[in-house]
Length: 397
Image (cartoon, rainbow, N blue to C red):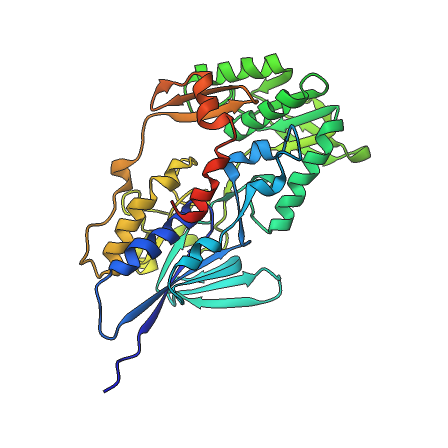
């Protein structure tokens, strides 16, 4: 009597940033090997979909734009290969698809992927689906949204222009905009006119006011002109490669280098409207991280990271949520026989956490409600924007 053939089941994960890589490795290392045996046996495969086989160290994006020494800080150091760490898993347990999700049929459990060549599509029949696509911004320098080539070209253009630029305008009063202004001001504040524009009335508005006030003081000391409470109404190409910027107060600026670090939008346009909020985020149970309503998804669809409605846009909302999603998926995939569902709402940090380097030597922050001195921000993040931790991300640690 021959052994029954294993039943093939695919777990599709969309996105290879902090959240996607973390849950892919957790499933392969811990969850799938622990599931109870069945008849016929079940063979699971993790199918990871992302626009590139390389991941981008988004935490370090502000410094990737402004190398003090291009030879010592090559752009390539901010990109790392996703695939080598997955070679350690059994044959057939993992597959990478280079492309972007184009559509999902929640009833049929079918995912459509536009492959990286831009011509072909692939249909994937999934058993479970994890949405970890993150968010996109107006500028391609902050992540790989379309292709590796687009992101590299956008960053390289700014790296090439900055040394000779006499005017730089940075838009966005959140951490990315403030950190980028600090990097540009630290390198070029004595030779170029640098302006930071924030639509909010103060910088770093997500935390207490004194943090943003100190950031503004540090930036001003570097020669950065900080404008708060004013928005960019339009930014259009001008003569000689410059950008003409119209502000909400009627003022017009011209910039040799224009860096937009304002606003984000969830990468979810391929998903049915019934599982999206009014802002485009994926409706996600903040405890279990299952996508809602479960009546529309069948219960084996999950979301984690910036694209999920529970997220506040912080790295910890991916990092700290990963163990909870692991628990929920183990519970579900085992037929609710193993462990208990995760509960991210129970463990999430509710106190203020933010560390923002301001240039190469200073920084501001608050950690679990406590003021973070400048030297501590430098030690934690400002030295190298935590680039030394990149390999941990790629390895799923």
